Image 1 (cartoon, helix red, strand yellow):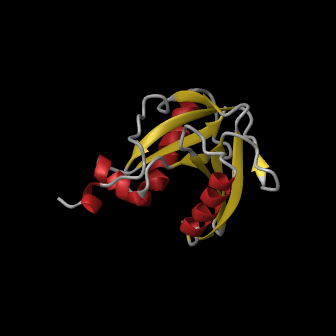
Image 2 (cartoon, rainbow, N blue to C red):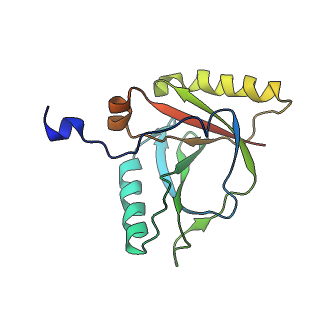
Length: 158
């Protein structure tokens, strides 16, 4: 097998800390940017991520954890939040307060409606309702294929 066929860029994803748990990002900085979408399909995600990573690297702000969150609140765009280890001067920075109930799903993006319904059922059992969901995709498409499937973590405000 050639080198490119075995290469991965994302670390393996361990779902245990993310599945049916409470997650907090208290005290952590996120670089915020915007992705243009068409019916929730990102059109410039690669370019946005390249821009973010250049800024993060230029300020030596890489986090130990590789976390990119997406707020899919519009058919036409999404806010993305890239975890960093410090505030970057002049950049749009944010903190994400509160705790989130998280659940891991495996499958194609076309199943997202089913995943959201399952998340709604999960939080309903806990006496909660869906809030403004955040999505965490721990693997790029190439790494998802390498590691045996696409993963998405859905986070609901507690």
